[in-house]
Length: 183
Image 1 (tube, helix red, strand yellow):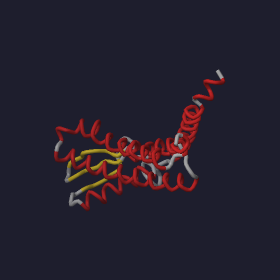
Image 2: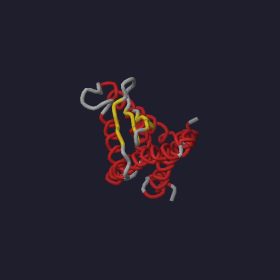
Image 3: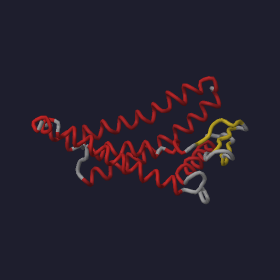
Image 4: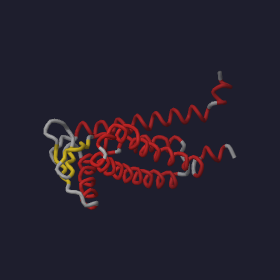
């Protein structure tokens, strides 16, 4: 049994570290959502920020857009050229994707300074890609409503999770200590 543990020590360390970081960050995020009462930012700060930035980008692309609080659920309605197209819910703010990204990178940690700056820059990049994804999804649903299901369920999740995967691969190949252990 001990020989088996030693053989898979790096794998076990990765899994335990990943689960610990993911669980801790998810718990912190859960408390953040639980205590976001919506009095200042509806439904919560990050979702509200994504909605405002979506509004600004759609305006920059020349669309008439309104982003309004949804009266029946904690979300923001996106109305493009007078047509209610989408709602921005908590899951659209990208925080859970950033938590997944951070958990993996920490589990494959490198030097502290390098890890910190990669986490920071990767999180900002994921946030920006997620925001662009929402804007393109909204435009796509406006111009191609018959493709709404495939856009929302396949193509646009593929963009954000594909970006996470590419960032992970880059991290492991360039900066991870584990990569150095096998050289």
